[in-house]
Length: 495
Image 1 (cartoon, helix red, strand yellow):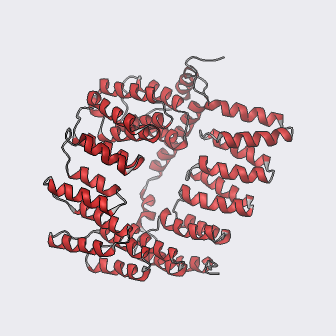
Image 2 (cartoon, one colour):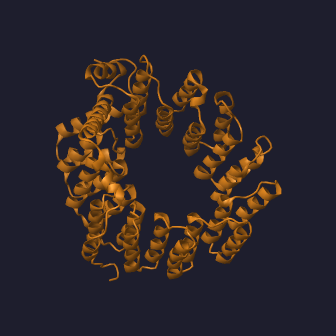
Image 3 (cartoon, rainbow, N blue to C red):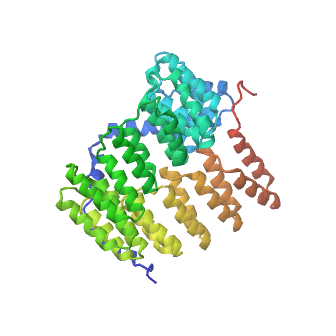
């Protein structure tokens, strides 16, 4: 079978490649700097544990004050990041945020405010989110930036209607220091990402007389269209309004033509760019590479990589990934691996997306052995897998009932902090419950909660049912107690 690759030979072939310079930068750190960094990480972990294990604000404050850990801006930012990426309890995060903000000579950074807004919005804590925005206005209106507006609108658009999103946008007239076309662009970008392009177009037409569209407005809309006709319409309207297209505008047009298999139109845009003295950049070429792959010409797409270099435009990882994807689609895996090797030779380090192209092929071919070898290569090359990488692997483990490999991957994720434990755990708990591995399920469940991440209710119920059948009542009480940590934090202390 085509997928039966000898990755072990590829491993040995890659072993002689020069390591990218970034690998060696850590050697320039002094022992003292490394110790300080390690102490800070331990401090962040201790604070995170204190917040998660506290049942009320008073007990949390008492524990923080007695811990002796110095709470600097960098530490607070990192703790909030843990809440964001670990899907921690938003009210506990807010209690911590409010307590720290009231300390003498401490001022939250714009990053902390934005992260806290994201945490609240993701959990649909909109009243608390708007109250925090009003606090930001009272403290310093410059804290409410375009990034802030984008974060708030994106969280609202995720779960609310377009009308509610637009109403929320209008609230910033009283909150933000500036309420202008840049804010309008933030709204349009949100609608393009979270809603449909048709809805974004309707809002654009309804508000374009209140906010004068600029080049960025049209580039946002052009980048979102999947239909070449719609993209052409906005491109023409831009020119009618006297807004001159830039390289980004042309790149958006090239990209939509390539995705619609209209390569002749894409090449005509390149000719127009040349007439207006716009040189194609790496994004332009990457779109062409992707388009050629979609029409079944992966070899011609590969030649574009050489053409780029000759034109003085060096291919980046994304360009190589586009070419690799083409060979994967064509099921020419050896050619795809050859391009991966070429990347390394040229000093470009494959990223998780590069590896995921192969994981996807192996997943559909049910090739766990080759997937696991590739995972080992990935780790040896110091490339941390992302959530998609982990999901391909754990789903294969479940298909083939490989508990040992699934738990090894879980331990690696817990230790090194990559991938989403929340998504991964659902598949892992299904595997463990299917095979009656209750000890392992309980261990992973507790580990997850100790890291501030909440297992899904579905997984909890399934484990609980199996434990009831096995009459493991103490374990059930333990897990219920752990899950209670994610209940909304009480306003007062409970004793």
